[in-house]
Image (cartoon, rainbow, N blue to C red; front, side, top):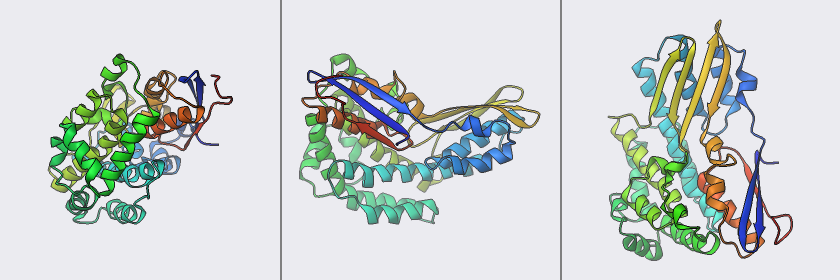
Length: 340
């Protein structure tokens, strides 16, 4: 069984409901009672995805709770590690998961090459990756992303360029039309700030904002992966500014709260220390927000047109990947066609 099992309700050509069964492990059950040092050592085993972000958030919050905020050099080191991890995650979706979901060949060897270089933080990897994205993945200069606020230019590129990502976006556009018909105007007008997702962090980018205004949400979410990869890699190449947002404070003695921007959105942690041990550990992940009963996933999918039960399942499957839970997931078809 996947950590998240999604069941789709479907009736009379409409997705009538979504049920999310959540079997994710709860870190508080494991970490409460341990010392900060033991907890930090355990996090790498608890989180296979975004482990660096989880570790950084915990280190920031625990330092604040102890009354000894982290030195600037250590914060900068953590920010770089989290930034590298986020670039890896963006490339994973762009080169492996989305091509496979859309029936295209994954860019497996290219991904392996860059995943290894980024993970090791090899000298010079960031400018080299920017050059690779422009020359091979896109076939256009990276500066052209902002020009795609004219969707006619973007559509011309995606329909005519032989570049791998052009083919992906063309296939994504077709899937969006076929499987995920728009809901009403109120949903069309709602920007990505409603959810803790990659797109929320880049919603003001001219290209992504143009896609959102036209209700082309799937393309906007995947486009945010590309914008995120380019933005983070540029910051890491420049080494002149923090690649990701990180902050922590102590609202009360023995209590520390921290936030870290991850590849999926903002991660938040509230931790309490008592007699040198963790007394409370409350974490809020983007997955918690997006896949809650009233979260962005349900709001994006319920009410959409779907001519068949398989179309309903396919629509939910595409949106699950767009909002990208940090654990394995499975989207199950309606138990009986025509019924919720």
